[in-house]
Length: 149
Image 1 (cartoon, rainbow, N blue to C red):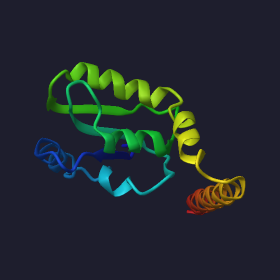
Image 2: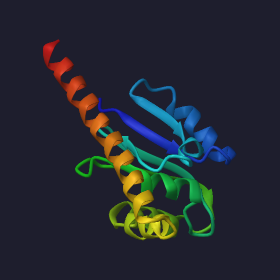
Image 3: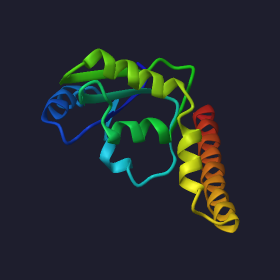
Image 4: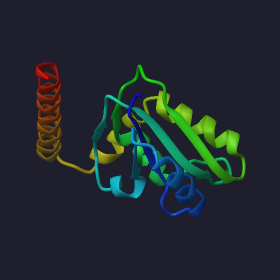
């Protein structure tokens, strides 16, 4: 069975109860969304992605939105959205789906870099590019290791 990585809102008891059931399966990895608030970019490839949250009057909680905006995942895979309660659940699902499909990052990037000097932006982009190259090397090594088995 294919690997599933689930990001959940750990501040809501209903989400934690739901996640406790998912943790029983060996191919499911559960991660707290709040652990990713400080990260500007992270990778969750070679797996399906799941989001578990409670609707906030039809809105997606900020911690989950942050995960959606900053995550680099496979676009060809099917992903999961699970709303554990709240008001206007269907609107929240639609919002999360649209956030995953649209290019929300552009406006966030503009906002992030607007107060930086050109030198600071260049330095920051170089750092992110190094992180990406390291990720690509690690991915290549893991694939090469699997072929040798």
